Structure formats: C-alpha cells, structure tokens
Length: 124
Image (cartoon, rainbow, N blue to C red; front, side, top):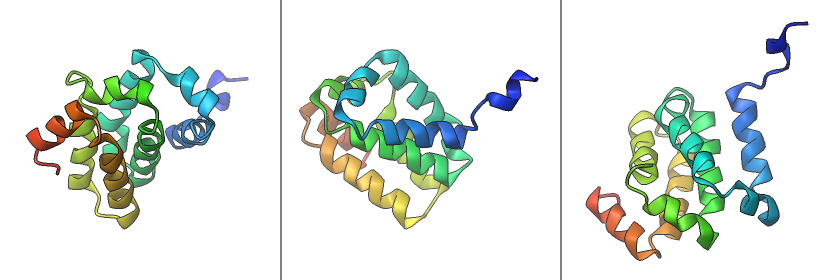
C-alpha cells in the first residue's frame, strides 16, 4: 500500500491538534518552540488558503493562550504569531474567525509584552 493513503489532510491535522489542546495536560506537552513554529508556518501558508484551517489554528492558539507557559511564544517577534493571526483578517471576513481572533487578543493583551506587540501593529 502507498504511504500517502494514511496521511492526514491539513484540515484533519489542525482539527486534531485543536481538539487535543482542550485537555490541559496535553496542552502542557505541546509546549516547545518547534510546535509553535509549526503553527506559525501554518499561519503563513495553509491558513491563508482555507478559512476552516485558519479557524482551527487560531482556535488552537486561543486555547493555548490561557496557559502562562505559552506567553513567551506570543511575545516572540521572530515567530510573529500576532502579526500572522492579524493578517488572516485580510483574507477572510467570516464572523467565527473574527470572534476567535478577538478572544485570542483579549487573552494575550493581559501580557505586557503582547500588549505592546498588539499596539505596535495597530491590532488594539
């Protein structure tokens, strides 16, 4: 059998990650710059092509934003998570995407460095 028959679509992959992050213990295991780099890469490419993938990735970030151990990744200017999430609004005007982005901003604006970051890009 061909190996590609068992690979997940990006939609299924991002849905699985989003679902797993709802469990605090699994969210803790997700911590790591490699995992956030993967989300950052998805925000650059696949999220700009599919509103459903964009929603699932932003929702994953929103869930993770409740955990203090993830704040350093939102503060990271090299990952540019905040800029990339903001850019999604240029591509999609769906209410569910706008709502989840606003809920993410509401969580991370409480972190001083993230508040400055949001202000720098006029997201507030």
